[in-house]
Each structure stands twice: as C-alpha cells, then as structure tokens.
Amino acid sequence: MGELLAALVRAVGADYVLTAPEDMAPFLTDWRGRYHGDALAVVKPLTTAQVAEVVSICSRAGIAIVPQGGNTGLCGGATPLPGGRAVVLGLSRLDRIRALDTDNDTLCVDAGCTLAAVQHAAAAADRLFPLALASEGSCLIGGNLSTNAGGVQVLRYGNARELVLGLEVVLPDGRVWNGLRGLRKDNTGYDLKQLFIGAEGTLGVITAAVLKLFPAIRSRATAWVAVPDPQSAVRLLGLLRSHCGDRVSAFEIIGRSALELVLEHIPAARNPLPRMAPWAVLVELSDAAADAALEAKLLEVLSLGGEQGLVEDAAIAASIVQAQALWTLRESISEAQRIEGLSIKHDVAVPVSRIPEFLERAGAALHRVWPEVRIVAFGHIGDGNLHFNLSKPDAADNAAFIERTPEANRIVHDLVTGLGGSISAEHGLGQLKRDEILRYKSAVEMDMMRTIKQAFDPRGLMNPGKLLQLERQDTGAA
Ligand code: FAD
Picture 1 (cartoon, rainbow, N blue to C red):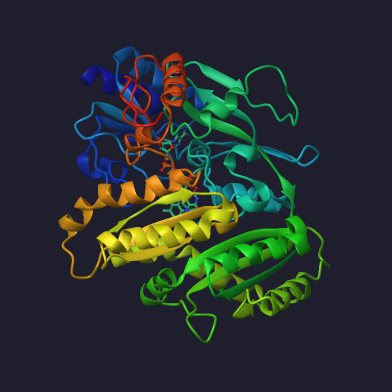
Picture 2 (cartoon, protein in one colour):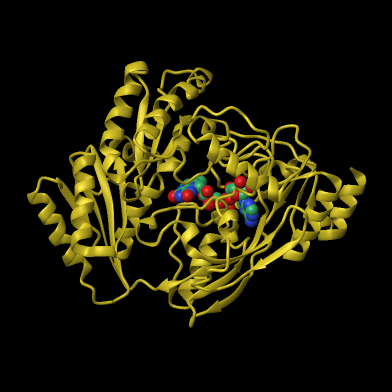
C-alpha cells in the first residue's frame, strides 16, 4: 500500500493524491447521495501521460481504477464499491481545449473539460457543439462520452455517440490508443471508438476526443405549450416536424406533478400559463439563418394544433430571457425532485408512438398496487425517452418506500420491454441497473458484451462492478 501511494505520488505529485477521508469524501458518493464507496486514494492526473502512468501502476499492483468525471452520473457508475481496494481517477485537471479546426468543423478537447467549456469554445468560433444537459456546468466531456449522454437536442443532433469523430484512450494495461482522427468517413474495420462510448469506464479511460461542430444557431423560437394529453403531444410533434423539418431542435414533455415540484422548490420559477395544464411541452425551433422568422412559423403551427384540439394554450417567449426562464423550468425538475426527497427513478425509452400507451398503462399498474405513490413524469418525448419517477408519498417512511423499488421496477421495466423499449435510455447501467439488465437483454447479447470486456480488461480492474459482471450469470431473457 505504501509503495503504491509512493508510486502514485511520483506520477502526479503529492498534492494530487488524496488519501484523507475528508478530501476523498466528495469523490466517494454519487450526485443523488444514493451510493457510497471506499477508495485507497483519489488521484488527479494532469495529462494523458500521467493517466497512462497511474493506470500502469495500478495494473501492475492489481488495483482497480474507477474513472470519474464531474460525478453527475445518475446510476452510481463513478462511485467505487464499498470496501473496495480501488483508486478513483479524477479527470477534472485534464481541461485543455487542444485544437479548433473551423475548415473541418472539429474541436479536439481533453476529457476533463466541462461540457459548458466545450460549448463555449465552439461558440467562440461561431460554431455549435449541440450536446446540452442540465448538468453541463459540472459534467465533463469524458463523462458525457462514457455515458453516451443524450440531453435536450438529441431530436436534431443525436446522442453523444453521434457527435464524436475520434478518441484518445488509456487502455487497462496503461497503453495509450491515439485515435484522434477527425475524419467524416473511415471504413477501415471495426469502429473502436464506439466501444468506449457508453462503456461507463469499464474498457479504458477516455483522455481526449475530436468532436463534430455544427453551424451556430442565429434564430430561435421557444414556447411552453399546454396539451390535453400525451397523445396530443405526440401528434403535435408530428405536425411541427412536417411543417418545420429538422428546425425542431427540442420537444420536451412535462407532467403537471413535475411542474408543481419546480414551482414549489425553485424560488424564481413561475408557471408561464394562467392555468396548470395536465401536460405541457417545451418546444424549440432553431436555425442557422438569422432571418428564419421562426416565431411566426411556430405561432402558425401552434394555431393549427389548436384547431386540431392538440393545443390548449401556449406562451411563446418574446426574449432570450423569457426563453431561458422556460428552459429553467424544465432543467430544474431533477433539482426540485432532489429537494422534495426520495424518489424511485426510471429513465426509459419506448418508440415515440407508444409513449401515451406507456404512461397510461404504467400509471394504472402502479396505482393498482400502490395507490398513494406520486408519479412525476417528464422528458425528451421527441426521442421516446421519459423520466418516469416515483416520489415518496408524504406519509411514507423512507426505508419502506425504498423497499418497494424492485416491485416498481418490475412493473415499469416489464412494460417498457413489452413495448419494445429500453430500461435505460440515457443514464446507463452503472451499479443501479447492472443486475436488472440481466432480465431484459438476451443471453447472446450479454455474452457478446462480456466477450468485449474480457478482451480489453481480462482481470476486471477497470471500474469493477459497473455495467456488467465478468462472470456469466443466468439471464431471464430468451
Ligand atoms: P461521471 O458521473 O463522473 O461518470 C459517469 C460514468 O462515466 C462513470 O461510469 C465513470 O466511471 C465514467 N467516466 C467518467 N469519465 C470517464 C472517462 N474520462 N473515461 C472513462 N470513463 C469515464 N444525462 C443525460 O444523458 N441526459 C440528460 O439530460 C441529463 N440530465 C441531467 C441533469 C442533472 C441535473 C444531472 C445531475 C444529471 C443529468 N444527466 C443527464 C446525467 C449526467 O449528467 C450524465 O450522465 C453525464 O454525461 C455524466 O458526466 P460526468 O462527467 O458527471 O460523469
């Protein structure tokens, strides 16, 4: 142990090897405070070479590595296991913008840049990096890629996976793979970078990436729209897309209970409409042209929606400040839920057309067995992705509430799978759904995943206990 720490200190400097419990504490608990772990040390390298050195030292000593970005993940992926003999690799010091290339529309960044810093670097060059999440001020781009983050503009630009051209990765044995290519086309075999994206740090440590840039957005129109039900929301999305094409850059649904939590807990929050609607959607149109007249277009389509009974009321933002206030309502839901107290979260995807059926059937099934549970539903309905969360009933005891998690998961996840969906749309598996997924993925699919893990990390030292276990287990799926 002493030798290991001495080697780590030689690799990164004494100030960046944390071992005191109070220094390590923030790295040993997840954002939601649900997972707590132990580590021998938290190590904070500055460069790829230092990451490689730290990984080599740990590999030789047989010590596990837990890569950690901004620690905003929602499934316990960045938290070491309790009692584990692991080193947490904090990546926030790798924060250089390496190269910006406006001819090729690419940006090469260190993995420890915050997502906001990446967005700003793109904006400074009159370009857009479209990944956008409520946690963008804290999450790091390496964490975004490792979780294949989604966010509010997937509808138009895709998930993180679709925004990457090249990666640099430190492999579990300490070797560095420089795959920092900026090519739009490269058919020379397996697309290795995609293996590391969404791998939640189980195959290697992402140290840098070449990202795609897009034209900067010069006009935008944003509206908060009351709709009678989710079916109307889905139909309104179709109407918008048929009239505005891919200028529809965001389409988020917010259930009444989600808005109520925000209004209760977030001091500046105000309902943009005079009445509480059962459902609202936050719509955004955007365009690279400054004169796209999007507000008029949005008004026209919403009026059409009104004639078809899809829209009950709407508030179109008249300024950037008003648009930001609408977005703040949407982006404060997670925070408001955290303040409210315990919740059982489901981050699920179904085909967009089946969202109304999912909401109806899941609500009915849950209330049959748990009449008092509060359903807080919201999310990226344009991508078929819902955050279907259950808030603790006021009178319920914390432990009794949490005990019902498996029962609630079974109802929601079985239904999602029956509708052709996924039990993790954005957040990943981490510790939270590592075992749950065994019920829903086929044995063949789990075998392929384990084969990949075995090939990269045969000793299981890279983020152990997350996403999958190396040893084969029975699966419930055919
Ligand atoms: P961490 O939490 O530190 O790590 C996440 C996982 O990636 C862990 O398994 C970790 O080991 C691994 N990892 C981190 N860095 C590296 C690396 N460099 N190399 C290899 N592995 C690594 N997610 C969405 O997809 N969409 C949303 O809209 C969204 N909204 C959110 C809103 C709020 C308020 C919060 C708190 C979270 C939200 N998230 C969302 C979840 C979270 O922000 C994302 O998963 C984010 O991508 C995690 O980035 P991070 O840097 O915090 O990673």
